[in-house]
Image (cartoon, rainbow, N blue to C red; front, side, top):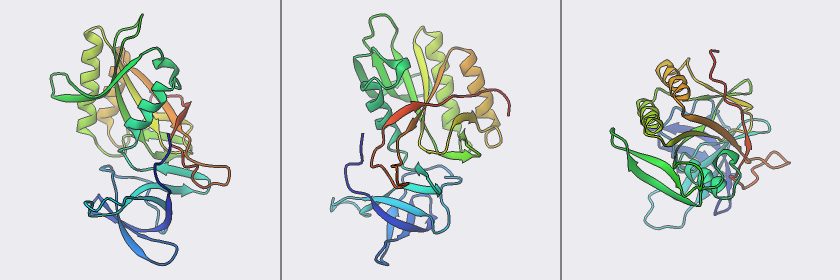
Length: 244
């Protein structure tokens, strides 16, 4: 999986109103880019940090540029576009790179389910030996000392998704929480108890109830430290649910 268009480098001036970011391009031009991320983006908006944008020629768009990547430290990149993880996960599953989810010939997105009016990110079916797999995908970009944490802000919605996944296990289905690790500095994943202790407690409860918790890291950076142009989820990352 790759970016469909060439990435444009710039320097972050500021992020504001959650969905807007001002960026200075190499020629000195300042543009306002769409920031497709509703989270806090903790650690992912450094002052004057290097960022990369994609550009759309669609005349209906109010903003031509979309913020995709940020350099959080030398040699480390994070993908902040939360519209990417579902596509990353689907491409990885269909290519057989998620070992735990191989053998499902059919994959559907945004299927309605549950008692709390939810939509599952990916529904896998057709396995000759295993029940259908209901896969919820979460983007991880919060990195501290080589550890990744989720969430980066209190998430009532995320808690709802965990309850729905537990209900699927009780109904005899597979339920999977897949962390798309979109920060190249992350070596393992933990629940962010320091940010949302309720989510951390519920995640542990869900895992104990049979929800499978997986994490795979994206291949974002090239050998020169610049973006590789790829978005592929390629490497499993351990998830540790014990107390910090």
